[in-house]
Image (cartoon, rainbow, N blue to C red; front, side, top):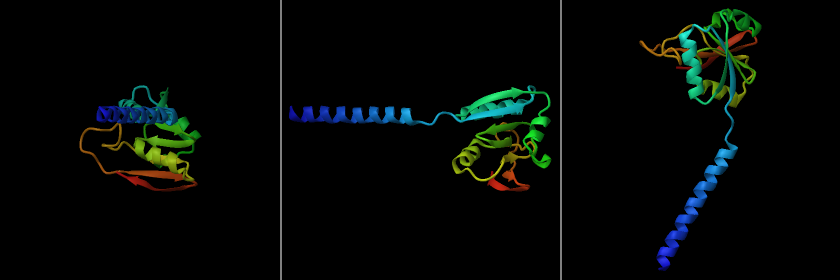
Length: 152
């Protein structure tokens, strides 16, 4: 009988520890990062990128507008980096189909840049799946300089 009681006690302690850990993890989990995206209401790839970002745990607010150019100019995005949509997260500008892990890294490291961009419409980037994926760079920009932030 002692073995059964010990086994039951051990099992109860393990269950309690698991519940305590799960509760503590739930309470201390970071809330979803809020990101605002300006895009054309008719752009399918922008919609796919928004869906992808939501799947990655971001809380996405969408502002549909027929011409996103004024937003790009307002945020000082160099024209050679433009893509189809523009986003802002925690004060950083995100231009185009930037992968969520690169944005998460940006938010974790807080480099002194204005933001990240994937210029153009690169097949294989998030929201641009289908066809033969192309290698591409995510670039950081700000203070009149750009540099490769990640290569995909």
